[in-house]
Length: 291
Image (cartoon, rainbow, N blue to C red; front, side):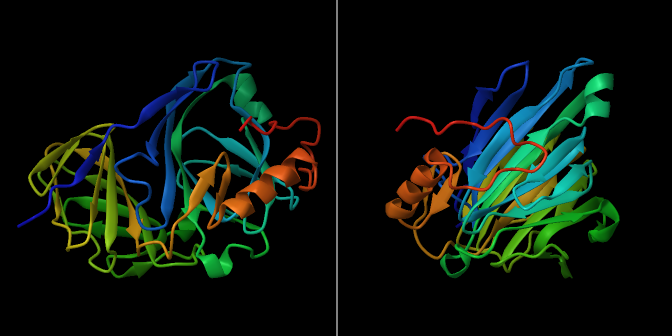
């Protein structure tokens, strides 16, 4: 008998200037899905001319951050000296490893003109054997990602493997991360090689094993092979998951680690200024939260 999926509504967080994100992972019902330990749906938000997104420099350890945009542009800078403007269809994959600092801001041209921003940001926990690797940043343009056409379905494979394809984005554990567009009535089988799977509906409505998933909601399944998705109407969705994590993870602020001691070390390192600065964005930073 098919086990029902866990349905997740997430929590809305107001970041100011009319910019909000809906945090869908982690939640009590699902701390992670495969290696995905954090999942934010940004916007959509319309920034007036002169306004924009300003996420000041902040640190990460033990994870990779992934940005995927539907609309708008974000400028990434990090402590390795990387600078990249990400636009819809391209991928920014930043591996924090033993420690990196980055900022995310609206580029000057987009800020001056005003823009609509809408997208997804996720954190992928690194396997314990790779948790302390050297930090790295890779930008992949849209034309470098696999694009698959199935009956009534268009897929972009952002990272990992699925549907017989493999993304060029380097990953450290079995996973899948994809955007799917489905025509009304279309059906999509999900990759059987991944034991944990999640579906986040951006637009439209899907059914998964008889359960309806409305726009804005997420559904998660683990264990037995997942049933196919069925589009109740024309829909866009994010599909993600992978192998179960190789042990428990602790999340605190922007840090992910297998031990609380490693979290405490990262907190002390940020508090004492031992992380590297971001070239071109050295004058601001996000202070360590209390606790």
